[in-house]
Length: 164
Image (cartoon, rainbow, N blue to C red; front, top):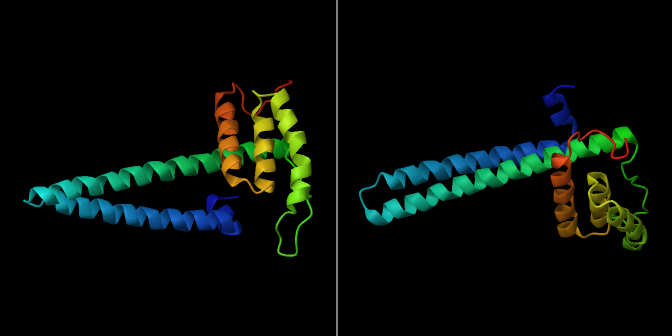
């Protein structure tokens, strides 16, 4: 499957591509405005132009960081799916489609205990992140997924099983 076929088949990826494109446009306009102000003869304009150029740098850094986070998360999910160790999404849902919080909270201790037992295994951190997300704690879910990503990147053979 080509990149573009996968992109248009997945609405989330299409949304990411659209937001990325809009951010690139915004960063280009900001950089252009910063350059115009930098070339102005007035000192205050030059200072504003320098400040304007910081914005595209910070925006580009944040964009690259988030795209790398998404790509690494997707790579880890593919490995777990291949191994048959990806958490199954079988929690009950409300009529609006939200996960029933009590059901997610009931499963949480299992994933927390698994992570405490194997703190150096990125797979357990990934599953714990999914449990946080199901429980509605998105901040901890992202923080935990970043930990999984750090361990994944530091592993000698990311696709290999820890017990192999």
